[in-house]
Length: 276
Image (tube, rainbow, N blue to C red; front, side):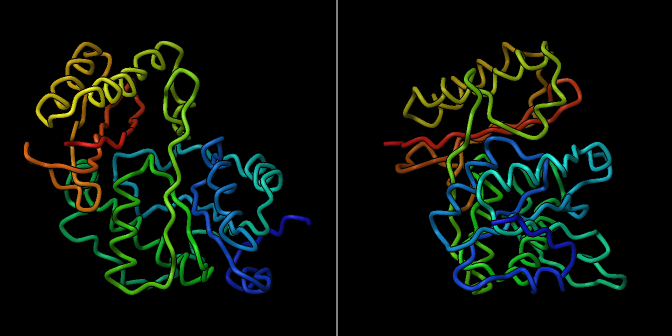
């Protein structure tokens, strides 16, 4: 089946076929991690819609909106190869018509951890995701665990606003050397890439421990050793549902999350750890 490219709402309505729909929202620059999301989506629905939209609302004034990689033709090839039925690629003015006033407010959870470093980011992310849900009307939506707080926020929004979409989290895909796949990895020089490996090493070091204080200390030791080439933004051990810090007495799954800048590139990574 030929891939259908829908550029606006009218095209999208015409492109929607019968049966169940799984949505994979992306900002393009697709890599193996995105391929894995499309593959996962195909197991949950009759057809897969991939959205490609670089959302300006989730970029701050000093972030990389203008230089965010855009590889649309290559992205279409990926979608075709992985069996997507439709690519929805709207223009900014189609997603955000003039006079727009209402948006989603992420609440307290959107102001901590990643939200503390990127004020307003989760408001913009949730706004575009809710708009995509309303436009595509999927039965299922698939997101990567690499953006763990994003995944938790979307689950919270779906629960709080009674959005009739099943949210599926897919495992993080890594390079053979352990670096989590990201569209921003292409910005890294060979030297930067070696420094960036400290993020996954730190997570593995933390995961070898079981007590929260020891997990944090083991991970931080690895990250401190990579300074000053690696500039740490945050290291947090949090509840996967709320992203609040876990106490020393915590038992169950926790997320060890890290963000750091290597050269001009900001990277994030995380790992789920069982405590207790």
